[in-house]
Length: 330
Ligand code: ADP
Ligand code: MG
Image (cartoon, rainbow, N blue to C red; front, top):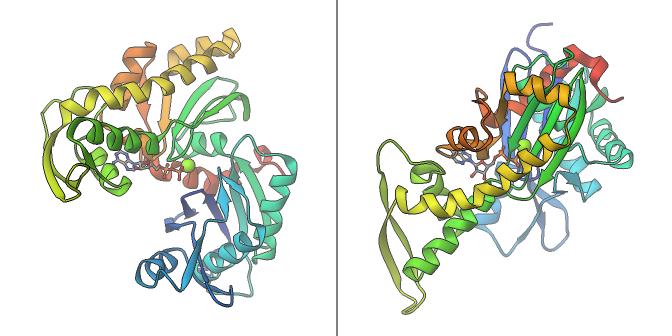
């Protein structure tokens, strides 16, 4: 039966959900967001539709983010959200897909079961979970089944996860709350302190993506930034350069360097020796900040590789994990 989707991988993130289908790639990328009717509390929209409903009719609907720190904090809404996504992907309702979902390596057995139950209740034929660092490694093209240590650093929006993987298992892992969003917050603080202007986090993210850097750029960039003057309360524009953002952003990045060093210090010497050959694999959207590889390389002395399609790595690895199912938790 051509075209029928039988196996899918889901990166159930705190901010967004990505669905990966082997041979098709990422088929869905939407915010992990549900809009609830303010009156009768019924679900009005899910994902992108929820986002636009919330911006158009803010008083009538309430936003619910059913996941917190990558864990299901609202089981009922998570199940409804998953059902909505699964139905849209698998138009055929008779043949249910097998689903693999990634979870943070810190989740408990109870939380894993909650994810599996939500997916099965949402219409999956069978649901399996895989730990996120393993998914990130598979998605980055690492053969996790080999008895060789690999160091994967995933810089997401809310957390940076560092893990050493060998023989299909996680040997050491650490998670810190400095990640992509922290860079945005550092920009908000810098613009406020330097220019006396308040900007929103969306603007800060834009600045980060367009001109931000943690290592000097080859070419100086600048952009006009519109904010609200803290003195007059009126709109005010300033020109911001990439070189002035270097120091506040690089300072923020030191937490990530420290986390890598802590992880290495907890790693058995044989695996450290493997890593000194193979280097660090970087994944996650936060790792796209300009100069990330260069700074990490300079500070750790290890070679650093930015994974191809870093943002979709975890989703891709989750979707491909079925080919190495023996490494998936049942
Ligand atoms: P999560 O898995 O936590 O949902 P992602 O891996 O999707 O997070 O990464 C989200 C983070 O990546 C956000 O902080 C976002 O601003 C950042 N990001 C995405 N693209 C870029 C880019 N081109 N440059 C810098 N940061 C980026
Ligand atoms: Mg992620």
